[in-house]
Structures are given as structure tokens and as C-alpha cells.
Length: 414
Image (cartoon, rainbow, N blue to C red; front, top):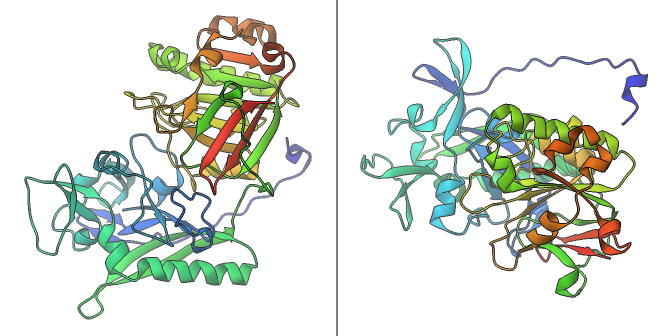
């Protein structure tokens, strides 16, 4: 797409020392992740974009920069570190870190393990990383406090509220942005050092670069339209911009995809998407599917690679109640960075959330153009639906307007 095959591409190799400390047989940093000098997601109107965003995990930062199954990093708005995207204890519990990436010094290998198998109650920084889970509420762990009957949840609360980390990271990002002359993102590790009675967070910069960002549309405002013209509405984690003149929608039916009995069949769905991506080159189209596009686990979403979707204008992720196919706040992952640099907007829709809308009957009941575009893949028509919007609506096209300030996105017929 970018004409790179016409050039002799030369690559450099960078060798870096892995930052961290040894704990038993494992080697890992207390925390690591990626930070951005400009926050692209305002899940609360109090959040200031210019103060930045952190995506952080305990252990090696690989879990913060890759989309991994069944796990989530801690998202921190540096203007208000206590504000979380999640609002209930159930959501905080679910969208917390459950696994950790470490180096096994005895086995001489990289490993991903359940976090409680590595970080136990004797781990010195633990009180700054976890809270006690009492069901209806969480309570920060205190030094020397033990309660084996209560589960630990990795909230990073005391790290964010009782150390210098958030303030220093905010200042660090602002300094880097001034020096670069534009917004930046950086990868980092973090540890705590005793400084009198109060531990002090030490941030180590691993790498820094200009922040990839969408070309923001000036004056984006969600229009006041009749409900019958709206096909979907999202009110959570909305980016900023506009995608107009959309002719095709490639829609993966969540129920039909989940019902596929084998991994090979689910993998073939991703290949069909890739073939459609090639077929529709030059057309304006978007993708809508269950859970996480690009997930390494096919049960959590369609396992596409960037090569399968790079001609699309948007990736829409549907959160389906009662399943594990849940969109993730994926800013900072390598997959997301590919999308940003290709100007492909990601959008999550939680149909059951207050104020949200998804007209399933339109996407599942309209005529399917898959067989017309790819006759050899017609057998996948029950799972993969291709909607030719002008043909279905008397010449209208789909437009998606996303206003991150109002935390609202609308896809409607224009």
C-alpha cells in the first residue's frame, strides 16, 4: 500500500539491557508500560488531554504493548489518576491484570504466568500494586498486612495516590514533548526505592518517539438526526474524527462466529476478511465484529493481522453481554499503533450500555453481497456479511462522526 516494496529496506538492530530485579527464580520490573503526552481517550469530562495517559502492567512491558487474551493493563489518566474507565467493582475486577510476563532465570526463557504464582505476599512493593477485594468494595493493602482469605486485585492504587509516580510522569512527558516539539509516546519501567519513610518511584525511559495520532477533524460535532437514520451509537471510549462516504460494511455475526466448532474455521473467517480487504481496495468500507479485532485468542475476537485490514477506514468492536468477546481499551498496543499510523479509526460499541445503540436487525437482516464479491467464499455467508449500503438504502451512504469531547459516536445514513 505504501510502495515500500519498491525500495531496498535496511533495518537496524537495537540491543538493550532488560530492566528489572530478580525475585526468586523470576526477573521482572515492578511495573512497565507505555505513556503518551496527549491522552486520546477522555472517559470523564474532567480529564485533561494535555496531561497524558499511561498504560501499565506489573512485570515486563510486553503485556502493555501487545493485545493478549484474558488480561488488561491499568489505564491511567495522568490529570486524574484516581479516575478509572471502569465504574463498578465487577468491572475493575474483570479488567485488571491476571497474568505477568517474566524471565525465568533457571529455565533461561521468557514466560507468561498467572500473576499470583510470581508476585506473592512477600513481594516488597506489593502494597503499592494491589488492593483487597471484599466483593462490594476494594481496600488498599498496607505494609505487613496479610489476609489469605481475601483475594488481591492489581489496582496500582497506592502507587498512583501515595507516590510521586503520576506527577513525575506528567512532568516527564511534558518535558519530552517540549524537546521534541510535538506529542510523544514512550516506553518505560518503574521501581520503588526507599527515600526515608516514603518510597520514591524511579522511572526509566526505554525509548521515545513522536506520538502516532489520528489527523483530527476540526469542528467535529455529532449531528442531531432522527433515530431511524442512526445505525449505531457509542458513548464510551470514543476517539475524535469523522469517516464519511462509507459504501460497504463487513459485519461478522457474533453468534455465528462464536458457534463455529473449530479454531481452523475461525481462522478461515480472518482469511475471508483479508480477501475482502484486497477485493475492496479503493472502496470506503468499515469492519464490525465481536470482541477484539487482532486478538491472539480466536475466542475473544477475529484473529486478523494488519495485512488483513489495512484498507478499512474503521474497526468497530462489539461488546456482547454474556460472552468473553469484549472490546479492550487497546491504545498503546502494537496493533493499535498500526491502525493509528494507517488512519484507521477504532471504535468500541457496548450495545447494552446506557445511551448506546446497535441496530442488529439492519446488519443481520439486509441482503448479503459476499457471494457477489467473492463467489468462492459464499459458504461463509452465515458468518461474514457484506452490506452494500447505497444498494440497501436507495443511494445513501454511511457516515460516522466521533466527538471525544462529548464522548459520543454516531453511525448514520446520509
